[in-house]
Length: 302
Figure 1: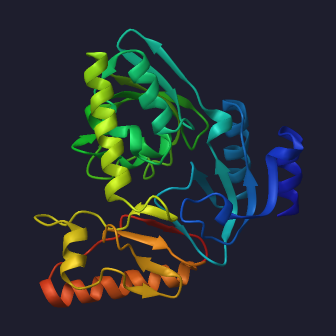
Figure 2 (figure 1 turned 180 degrees about the vertical axis):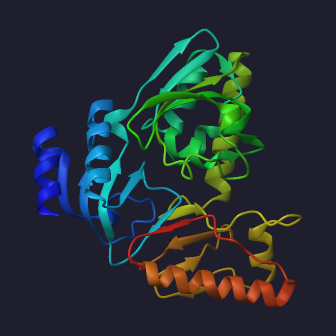
Figure 3 (figure 1 turned 90 degrees about the horizontal axis):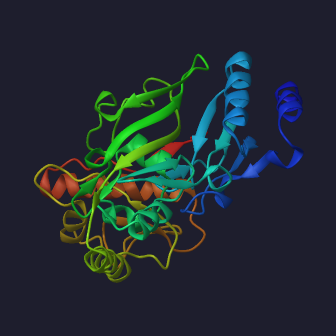
């Protein structure tokens, strides 16, 4: 591992390469042990160098945004964590299209669309993730999804090639795409919107913002919706009807405000969250014969 660190420091600045960095500092759950190596790129060249070193040394590489929708193991993560976030962000407008860097927060991109009087991206304003992560997971809310607006993405391939791919080739589905399967790293993308009425755009964004504040447990750390929506059901309603509102394991708790969220109530560990998820799955299965599939991605030394 020392050889990898030395190679990284030859191509990156010293403050861009960290060792033993607690992942709890970089996830919205505020949970997670140390990453062997934590890298903060500023340019496409930085990202390319890191990916090439990881491939040559045959060590794991995990691409991180702002750490939403993620549960990191208490024992931490092997290899390199490549955080494509605030140091690699930005939005530029060209007519009805926005070009967005992968590390840009969706809230920032939605505000940029609003400033350009473009409609169709209001749904993304409250999703706590980056553009790159949203593309990978086809993120959505309030009836909108990335697949509805995404035109194309620019990625770094496992072979080190930078290529632009039309959205229709990404196999975008419910919280999925083929990006991870193909080993791509999202660098940027373009969304295509429509001109809209500024007051209506603002009203819709305000409506969604109010709904989030009143219905979601934003006051506590979480990874967003814990479970995928089962066909024909709502996960939160099933959990509530199973009598699990406020159910707690260690420091992890089913939110009292919205049962679809597991929150970090009191210094929860990843083990607490995993036990709670397993309990909820078992009880809902027993009561309603419905399988709940976690939406939160589990990574690290479990």
